[in-house]
Figure 1 (cartoon, rainbow, N blue to C red):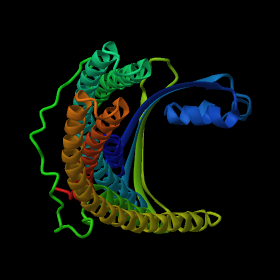
Figure 2 (cartoon, rainbow, N blue to C red):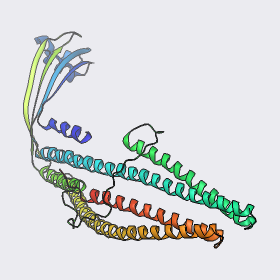
Figure 3 (cartoon, rainbow, N blue to C red):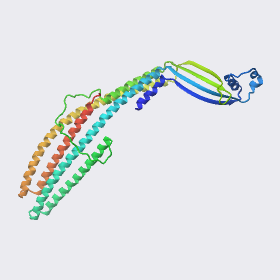
Length: 389
């Protein structure tokens, strides 16, 4: 919006400027006093008396002036206007890229919320398992089959899981507040998620490079074009400027008088032949800034392509991790079931059961984290490869 307003300001290179003024003056300066009377068209023969000419009394003049300036040909301003128009396009693309990035951050926050709920589920399952172990351990302790230290160890593990569960639930509230901010909503609402099982096994292989038409790239390209126009504007400032002007004045020796009227009109051709190398050095600076933009664009494109390749590799790694963690969870679940049965029979120690439960919970956490990373990489890949509409 600011760039559009700046562009509209450049309409002044075509439109006239009109000003109305009212001025009151008084003088006894011989030259000015005589000039006032000339402007008032009130000169008489007696005004040529040398004594009166040399020593006039206080002479008043009240002028009402209407002044007009009309640009005709200013080539440097014309190219500045074109450059301002390019700036509008620059910020249109920047706005689009900002919307894309905001959408990515909102999706990411939503995924964080979803996997925070998944973490709570894992901890609740781990807490249920730990409490079941505690019940069995307490029974064994009452029967005198185990020592009190075993019972205390299980109590410590239950308390630790409860602490982690409380933190995980607080994380849900924190992520919900972040999501509210991104959506422009008041904080304090706790949201739930309804992800419908996006395909974490999908890794697109048809996108090898980041598109040149991505919004942020297009913004930089338009900025380079704007720089070219500003450089051209500097070069055009060596050319003459042609502008018209005109004024109409009413002069009177009375405050509210509008007696003598006269106009003045003309065309001015001005040419800045030498300005102490100011224009030359300005063009040099603008050229360097344009080159800097070009280098930045190339660097940003290279970094984006590197990020694309890195993200695709990470997604393939995540696929392998997800597969491994799912296998580990099945094995850890079976191991825990066997150990719990043997524990009931007094064949294994409490420590064995607790370690097995901890391993199962860790593998479930790892799976949740790997799936979260895969989803974040997926939406980041979309951000990297989004093209302009």
